[in-house]
Every structure is written in structure tokens, then in C-alpha cells.
Amino acid sequence: MSFFGKVDFQKLTYTERTIYTYLKDNVEKIPYLHVRDIALQAHVGSSSVMRLIHKIGYDSYTDFKADVTRKVKLEKEKPTSPTSFSLDIFPADVNQQLEELARLILESDNVIFTGVGSSGLICDYAARRLAGVGINTFSFSDVTYPISSKLRNTTNNLVIALSISGETNEIVEVLSSLRTNKDVQIMSITPKRHSTIAELSDSVISYRIIERRVATHFDLTSQLPTVYLTEQLADLVYEMSH
Figure 1 (tube, rainbow, N blue to C red):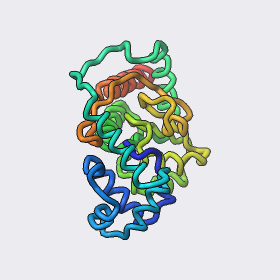
Figure 2: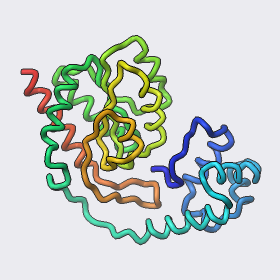
Figure 3: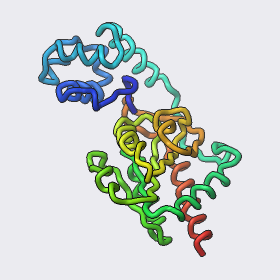
Figure 4: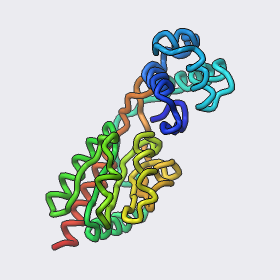
């Protein structure tokens, strides 16, 4: 999740990325920090900190700190609830969507799952299940890997992105780099139908879920819906291919 909004990492300098990483890892400290504190801890200059603050959309550090303080407070006030799962969280036509995706998988030469964090672990699981029913597939969670180069001389590729937030910067960058490749079709599974990742996809399977986070960045949101969808998908692929 990007706590400070959408950030185009390709437009950030090395120093700005360093500052951003420090801010992301220390969100709950920000309400008590001055610009010079951030500069000191990130080993950069105060002017560099301010350039990043302006680049991510704030007019001043005061505005930035006030907004982060508000968001941190809201995160702490969110009620927690036990993990629950019901088929009611899926759209009425989810079975039809899964069948269409299963056909697309069977028609594709390469199926690539991509995601980071807990979604990356589900990618590994989904790829393993599909490989078990005879699909040429692999999981791609190392977003620094030059996936565009790997797919350069291939055709009929299907990329399936998994993301709870729908705004994971690393996955947005990957999908953006693949979007212009006519030999790649992009599909995503995310609760956020109107997110950046969904907009970069040719089709989306969505669902409703309550996001649960600890200390802002530690995601405890249930992955049961995604596991269910990927298991159903593997079963459908198997049934259609036999």
C-alpha cells in the first residue's frame, strides 16, 4: 500500500527514493518529526526532503505532516474483526468470470502470476496448482527482474496480477511496462475495481473485503478470497482440459 498516494518511482531520483523508503517505514513517527529529523535519519539534505514532499503532492511539510497524522489516527481507530469468508463477497457472475479466465489460461502459451508480499505468496501457490494440471506457468514476485526482456521473443502471454490495494507501486510499474506489448494480456484479481492495477488490466475479478492493517503497513487483510478464486480456477482448468 502507498500511504502517501500514487507515486511514480520512475520519476524519483535515488535520493528521493531513499527518503520515501524512510518515510514509508516510519509513518507513525512522522507526526513527531521535523524536516531536519527526517533528513538526518535518511542521511540526506533538508531541501531534498522538501522536494519529495512537493513531488508527492503537498504544498508544505505542515500539510504533509497533518495529513499523515490524520491517516495514522484513522488507522488506529479502525475496528478489527475476525477473519470471515462468504461467497456473498463475490459478484453474481463470478463463476462466469472464472470460466472465461480458465479458457484464456488454456489458450495462452505462458501464464505469469505477479504480486508482492502476501499476494506474492498466493502467486506461488496459484502457479504451483496450475502447473500441476499441465499449464506452463510461473510466479513472478521479484519485481526487479526484467520480465519484459524475458517475454521479448514470446507470444500469447497472460499476466495475472494479485493485489489487495490495487495500488502496489511495484506491480503498477511492471504492468505499465507490459501494457504496450501486444503479445501480453493482463488480468487482475483485486478488491479495488477502480484502482490503478485494475485500470491497467484487460479484465478484473473483484470482491469485497475489509482491509486490516497493523502499524499502517503490516497487512493482515484476509487472503482467503484470493485463495478460493485461484483454487476454483485450477479446478476449472483441469475440468476443461480433460
